[in-house]
Image (cartoon, rainbow, N blue to C red; front, side, top):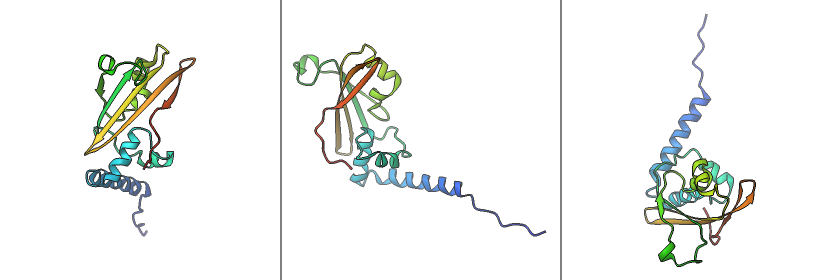
Length: 154
């Protein structure tokens, strides 16, 4: 009986290709500002489309940037910032987790009152700031309003 040649596993090839694409993306990020910018926008959930965000989904999101988040009970500019500046804290992964992740969301929003979030990320001279207003809409839900001016997005 004749033995069959070994078959190629397309799933394994796809996994290897995905790992290679991730490695190339991460290795080029320090030298290609467009890659760093696209990743910054991804971290702030500000990519131009869901498809652009989804393409980057497999790229690891830990410890890539200096991420900070501040939460305030008052809208920006309402009170003197010297006396009421919201303290910011470092955040791993996505800075938007202070709004979207269960524990942080509960900690900041369980009282059902308006909150203003300032999210900042920086990397090798590039920086991105996103301001959000979360308004209660009843039954524990919130409407998210981005306060920044629209700008060109990668």
